[in-house]
Amino acid sequence: MNYQGTIIEESLDDPAVLSKINIVSTKVEIVTEKHRTPWLKQWTLHKVEISEDQCEAIADMLASSLQKNYWYADFMNDKYHYIIYSGKIFKVDRQNPVFYKDAKKYGLDLGIPSYQIDFAPDDPIWRR
Image 1 (cartoon, rainbow, N blue to C red):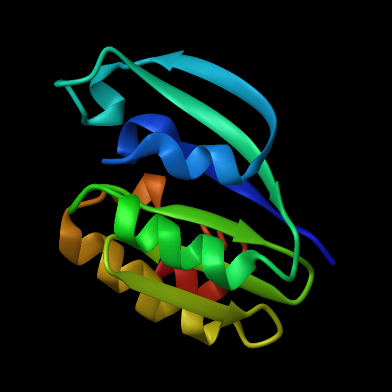
Image 2: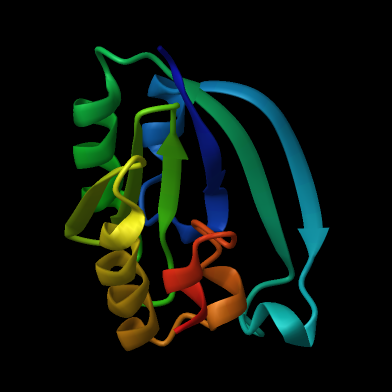
């Protein structure tokens, strides 16, 4: 089953990785104070679809392409959720959401605002 997710183009040191990914749609958001990225004028959000046989390779490419600190990318299917930071990949079994806690803590430790780390907002662990 294919994976779906979002990648913010401005989060990438090397946006060439996007040429290897099926972009389903693109939306541009004007940066506001809430985004906490005042050095940017906009976020270009790409909705993506990644085949199951490419997900590991794409996760590795993103982990190498994401800017350090403040950024992550993610994609999921019914079974797994990949949460990717610069140099770090979390593969969460969606049937065992306790592992979201590690991915969330890692992002918070980087300084990403908690409202932006919305991997599993319905998970009770999320609220801790």
